[in-house]
Image 1 (tube, protein in one colour):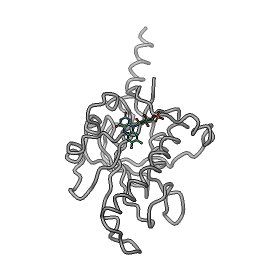
Image 2: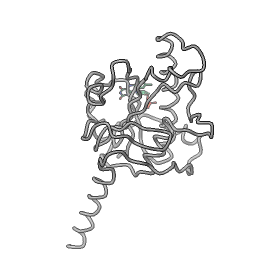
Image 3: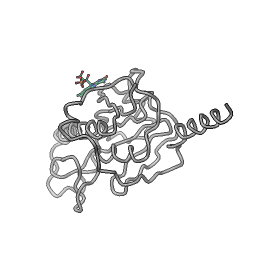
Image 4: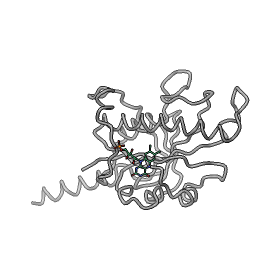
Length: 216
Ligand SMILES: Cc1cc2nc3c(=O)[nH]c(=O)nc-3n(C[C@H](O)[C@H](O)[C@H](O)COP(=O)(O)O)c2cc1C
């Protein structure tokens, strides 16, 4: 009995502290191996809303975030396409432990706010607070400052960013599938609240969210 309780306590410790907010984090490089083929993953794609509140491993987090906004070539270009090669979408990772900004250059998660803010990424869908990871896709106009071409008007910049996010969420859906994780793309976000807690400047636009996690 004592051994069982000790094992249970250790298991609880692993699930609750494996991703504790300890400032910025460096994730391992993504593991690109998968047992599932792309077409099998496509065949299984669906929205899941029956999440279990269990943290993802650093390797799973790394794979999902790389699929969302990672770099896949020496020249710095990314997994997902972006109009005029301008990567104007930032990805925020909202977990039980905090809000982080993903830095694709070195698989880093920069801590923005400590605490469980998952509920601020929805307007009231209760499953969101159980999903281990809620990604929030945010358009940032700063990205156009160093563009090689003349930037398009603001409304077209936003349209381009929305199109890029379509690719990003599908990449995440497929990567999640290879880990046996569920996902749900979400347009219904408490934008005012998230903007506040994630300390987003007024020029940034919240485009979409996506819950990822273990499912029942
Ligand atoms: C742009 C967009 C916004 C969505 N917003 C939500 C949302 O806020 N909440 C939700 O539960 N599902 C949301 N969904 C998921 C759709 O409801 C879902 O994709 C649709 O019902 C088809 O089901 P399937 O994904 O299982 O094929 C959204 C999907 C898209 C593409």
